[in-house]
Image (cartoon, rainbow, N blue to C red; front, side):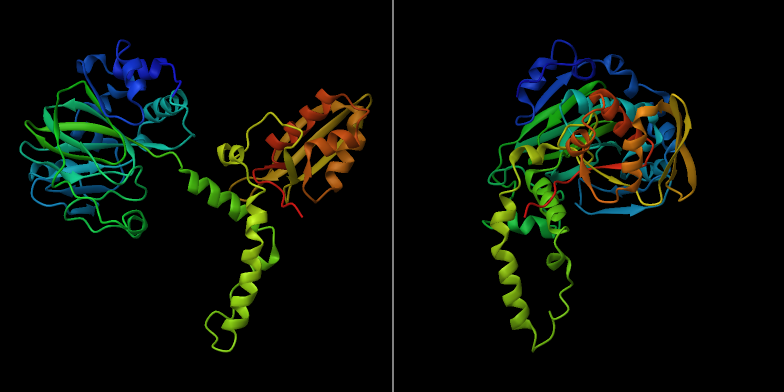
Length: 403
C-alpha cells in the first residue's frame, strides 16, 4: 500500500514510527510505546483525562462485564464510574459523538489512511486492576491507545478466517448469523494459537488487524480508547449497486404475493427463474470502478453525472436585464420550506433555467451541456452545481439501468 505518513498518523505513532506503521497496515499488528504527553492533542483533552471526566459528558449506553471470568457483557443505562468501582470492566462506545474535537481528528485519520468517510468509531475502555477483556477477535481493524495505567495484551493471528465480517467472536460467545457462512470449515478457536504479549503503558499505541485474537488484563487500573475501523467490504458495495439497479425494474420490486400459496408457488418460482436468468447481463453493467464510488457522488460534476429535480423544490427567476434574480425554495430535513438560494445569474441562462424547471426525469450533465451547446461550459457547470447545493437538483449516486 503506497501511503505516505501524514501529520495525523505521525502524531499518533510518532514521526519516527509512522512509516513503520504504514508498512504493517492493514495486514500485520504494530505497537509503539511513547509518553502520554506525546499523543495527539485530540487525545489529551480534559474529557479524556479519566473515566470520571469522560462520564461527565458521555450520554450514551454503557457495556460492562468481567472479562477475565466470563465473555458475556451487559448493556445498561448507568453511571460508568460506579460500575468500575464495583470491579467491573466498562466500555463506552462512540464517544466522539460527545467530543467534537475527537470527531474532527477521526476524519483526518480516515483521510490520511485513504478510507471512506465515517467508517471509524472510537470507544473508551476502563478495567480495574486484575480484570480486562476475554479472548476474542473483532471484525474491525483496531487501534488501541493507552491513556492511564498498565495492561497486558496477548495477541495471535486467527487461522483460517481472513478478513472476518460481522460481529466479534471468541470462546464462550454466541456467533452471529453472519459468521456461519464464513466458518463452514469450523469456528475458529485460540486453543493452539501462539500468543505474543504486549505491555501497554500510558502513551502506548497498538494496531490490531481484524481477525486477531486478543485478550487483556490490567496490571493497574486501566483507561484506554480504541478506534474501530470498518471500511465497507467489496460485497457490501456490490450488493448496494445491484440493489440500485434492481430498483429500476418493476418485476424485481413486485412483492412475492404468492410465496405462501400452495397453488401459486410453482408459477412464482418459474417467473423468478426468468428474472434470475437476466442477472448475468445486469452484473456486466457493474465495473470495478463503480465499487470504489462513495455512496454520495461528490462534486465537481462530470459529463456522466446524473441529476434529477427534487420533489417539492421550486425554482423562479425575475428578469433584471442583463441579469436574472434567481431563487430556489426547498424543504429542509424537518419538511419546512426555506429559501435556499437567492442570487443573480447571467440573463442568457433563462432558457436553461426554464428547461430545468420543467424537466422531471433524470438526465445527465453531458446531455444538458449538449442541449445548450451555445452556452459557455463554465456557466452550465456552475449553474448545475449551484442548483445541487441549493437542493433543487439531486446528484444521483447510482447508474441508469441499461436496456
